[in-house]
Image (tube, rainbow, N blue to C red; front, side):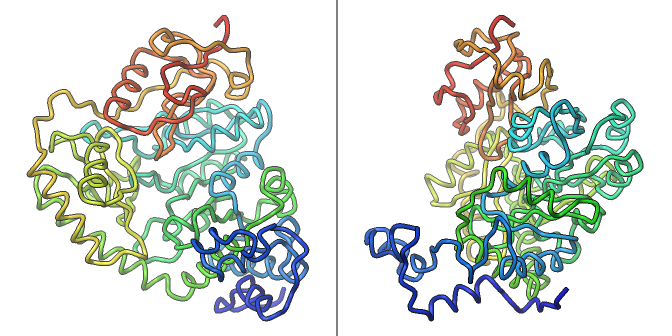
Length: 484
């Protein structure tokens, strides 16, 4: 294998070289370097439109890379400590689905926590795999699900020795990390693979004093959202694999669903961002950590808010905590997290990552500056002063045990009927219901609808949570299995 330097960015360099050529385009895209769509060119700029090109020999082909994309993937694998890295242009949703499709097929089991992203369940709809849930512990004060306890995973493995893989979130949306090394060890001891949704863990590979990354823990696959904390363009991601996974087979799986018309804007952003993190990530994330720690301390000084951190660590269900996540419990202010989220946006022009029934997440990463942190702290203090009220009547975001009756695939494609939401209690759901973000299903296909779930959906809608998933966009009706 040829030796490549992390100072290189092969895709970016190939695009720069293409710009120096007087190439006449008789291929797609049809805007022909922006000339055919002047309004879009005015919005994005000529430079961007000139770089929006089709696959060609000098730029390589994502479906079967042999030159510059292959070099970029080898550099990414080295930077992340993986056996191989695949550049993904369908977001981490595509990467997560590729993991599930690569390790399981119809009727085979995957052990996983219930608080997974919808992409995991979507993959099971596609291939017919069966979920085996490890019920997570919950923090009753914060109203959040925690990580998977090692004993819970062991119990699930022993009860399902035919399972093919264990899936772990590293970290959760709130920054909670499970004992990943021990879970990987358990899975391998029982001839199972361990795959990791690392959408929010790019910085684990480059920062110091961070929770362990999936590849360092010995996991077999990890889906990493470079665009979240890594600085690449939205929708760009990386799928990492360990030595146990066959590169050619994983590529085949990816090519089942990933576009054959890969965006070179996205690919070059992955290439440049990998270079940036490999060369400067350690210092960049040390700065992010300082900003996050400062923000956490200042938020806790305001009163009533609780920006939680490493003090939650209990050695098991909270084995570690990602301190870059500014997760803030808002219930003692008398406001749901989604209400604080909306006030920040509508009254103070501050866009937080998400708010749920009891918590707010402010995402701090390499593009943040102290002035933005100060503005957020000031706005939170003013919201408390202006809008604080008694917390009576507020609902916590509680974990609701899923009652899985049929497989996600069977339920999604089964004969179904549409009923008013209030008439669905006791029926089997055939679609997803979730708040987005974070995109963790409240209901997934094949699960029983209970009165507790219906109360949760009503409350979340009343508080202004962005509800998605059902065929009925207003979520006044739900599709349920016919005759069940």
